[in-house]
Image 1 (cartoon, helix red, strand yellow):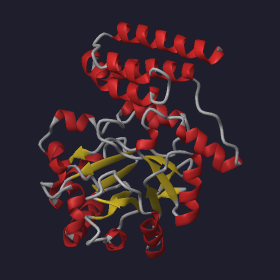
Image 2 (image 1 turned 120 degrees about the vertical axis):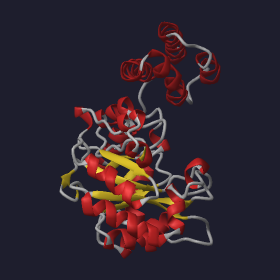
Image 3 (image 1 turned 60 degrees about the horizontal axis):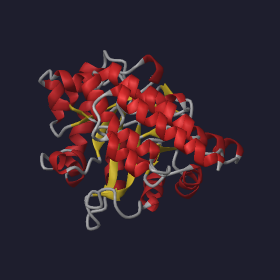
Length: 326
């Protein structure tokens, strides 16, 4: 499929997730066939004031292109200024965050709080589209709460202002990530606009992915929490969509080898201390569901040495393999 002038290999995307979708994880997902990866959300204000950490979040590896850089903010001039800066970057697509539910974001009128102000949405999207040389997309939610469901209205505004696609998470801000995603709102948005619509929410495996396509008619799907510790979800979904065959889950050995590789990539990207601290959560996601995972996770959260973690993981793997042979 295409978003604007950007050609994508398939219709199964990785959702932007703060603290999760950094470069190493995006590369792993891309290797499993992910059609489009998104950066963690980047503060437009941070980039405006030349914050090094914010700017670093926009960097894309050659292996993950074309990738989308997601920016957040509430000031049209600052958002446009950042989009203009990104014209010279490796970003294939600029995405505007209007879906983040975190209080530290919404209290500043950013993220999903923007959905309460359709007139500001219009000003922001117009300003960013006017200066961007790259396709501009918008990620929204169902609405702020059940009393203000306005995803269709916001999607229509985005399209009228020149957005090239809209992603819809089927939950309100008040739901955060609880309850069930409303796929019906995704279908309503798809029927209301002519630009591509990306469906998001509750895709945890191949069957759900197919069902989301069928029930909503969306052009692409976006996977968030279902990909945590599970980059293989992309290859499994693609296989299922293409052949109808349900590929098996990765073995414990594949998981442990991927964890070690992921950790090495993170350390190379962020340094050993930060890399190990951030890897702890990833390891917990990777090993979830395996025997003795809770006890192993508890131990890892008290470790700060790479070799110590690798030794623990190798012992954990050996125990998994012994049990498989019992």
